[in-house]
Length: 338
Image (cartoon, rainbow, N blue to C red; front, side, top):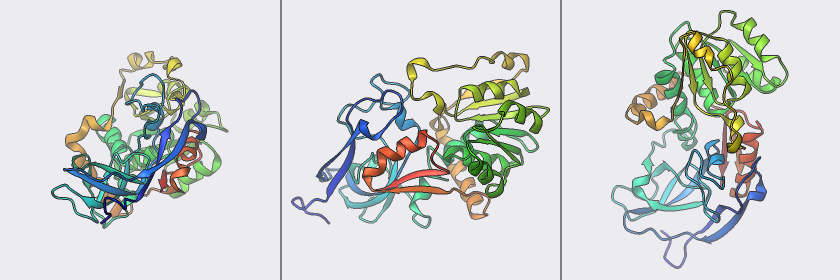
């Protein structure tokens, strides 16, 4: 256990300037300081992995947006997993594996009440991927509870090679749906069909999405799980079936300019076809997350779910990893391992 005069060095990513447009390393700086000693009810955690999520971008604007704003000089928000190395909190001991809002840093000293113990029988990063609050649990909630996907339905998933889309597509398949994925580039399209076993995939960067979708689903789609927004949302609306559902999970195409967010122009398709469009966050289903996690663990054990990881190493890699996420430079879960 570290003494008060021999604390480990905490390296942290702080916001150097607010972000306009594409996020990049120039918006951040790395600072070092001794890790803070835990107070009563607190623990010190050594970070194992940090989750690179689209929501982080919305916290970096000068005007507060969808999520709580990071102040200039503040540590950048991030969910992570790690191990307790010092505890002043009942029920937590050194060595415990935990998950929670560790922030973009190598050591986190925080109230134990903000953390959840996790089972280290699985790799810790599983709790940021398949069982991650912003990843697998979000995907399951959107497909199962909001989209109410049923066997035999046709489901379209945007950003299907990304972390949330990857699990959403596999959950829909596990529920018996026919699943079409949207992704950028032939490599990602091949991953969706050859590795994940989706029924079809469309390369939005190199194909006519509207034409391909009409060819693949001539009778329309029952559910669209949207991570992107913009033009792809309008194409899906134009192909929604009667009593179809559009699930708004995210809109990564719009996050770089909140002052000019583009809404759908074909929203009247919802009225014409007695369809609905509904947004959500995973915490709207907090009481059902135990059920969701249990089902995901079962499918994972059965080999029906997989989540590739793209890992960048070193806390200094965090800013560039976030930029990669918005440039589509990842397949599956983007992580930083400090």
